[in-house]
Image 1 (tube, rainbow, N blue to C red):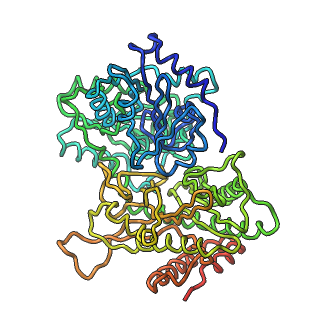
Image 2: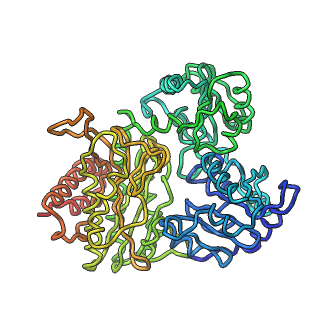
Image 3: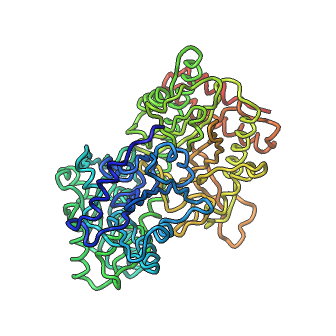
Length: 615
């Protein structure tokens, strides 16, 4: 990848850091977080401040610019990408590795006492603001809120995108299974138990879920910029009023079964202050909301707990689960057609990473209820597959060959569900080393998928099941093993997940959740391997029920064959072979029926070939 030159941007930012027109004190450092005002993972083009100022385009990373240094923190998914994209002005801080200083510790090390550190208060969570401010203060530094975002001021001289105002769409109970009024009832029950007068909802996917609406303000994520506030008898919605059509208004009014108040997006702080002035109870606000929003509530009135909507959204109802299953069958049909095409075309034509991604998208578009991709397709051939969240560009685009592994991680937004699937294939003759690595990744995938565990178990308890076969020979991977997936919502969803470390607000795994099972292995400069299915958490049938807690297991709903050419059968147990044969039989039955119905015979032949029983 080619780095973007950033010296002129950093010079302009440093001038603003000392300009008292925008800052009350000259700043010795300025923090550029990765998120937007709603702490979204994926961003609208207008909010990509850190990519603009640093040149690093990964979905996670925070930057700090001092008067003479610039540093960027990111995690193991992006070490290779960041190393390629950052120019000579930047220092890469490999977050999570031993010896890497945290942002606060780095600031304390490089800045003199009595220094001022600025940041846009809308872009930091309240929780991080509180801990960071305290740590800096103890070291003689001061964290200050800067109301005019300094990166925005630099960006104004360039081609910054406009405020997104996509049209909004409504979802009927055919897709959601619950009306707005029913959801409000559940929220108010939680509010009453917590003795709260109101709940402020700032996460975009939570607002979209509550309102049974979707938008397109952020590529790949069917959300729209909005806040919502729920009180005992009112529903406040803050968004751009110009896109509230009569259809949208009627939907909100009829479904909410409560007094509806629509306000401009920018009025949210003013309204929070008004609610606080006119009520005496607690206001529920997530500590993961922005510091600016939380700070609008007096300290004594804050009920700082994760939003109850996050868990409600994660627990899919039967209508949502049926929709998600059906979406995955259609998605699998598109993928079968894609891999059949790829195997045939590569023999006579040049196929690049971008070409493959484009063709796969075209196949998905042919399926019913397709809306968009759910994230940029990770189409990585050979060494590019080792870049965990790689996205091909014209500068990095490699040919897919018959001598290298090809990793494709892709997904779609359908009106009835969101998909996310990774398959790694070899279109020639894989080496024994590649086969062993692939087989060990598959063993971990199967081990996790077959797990039976007590209700209420957190995902990190299960993580080692996916890694053990790799650990046995001294291998591992630098990313989590599973994330939640929305129902026609964000492809990455909390509050649960499966990773190697516990997270503060992790919710335990519960029946009705969706989560991915995606172990991998990556050799820098050579290849990447990942096998990813979306699975549903469901109750398991067990002989006993210790403590009457109930036990859970996983149901795989991604139905795309796993390439048998890449297996070392001698490494698989009889149980693992039986699991793979059973899984492939389900793929053949469910996806095959749709392919036959659609007359996609080449894809059907490929599916039959790839799902043959192994002994």
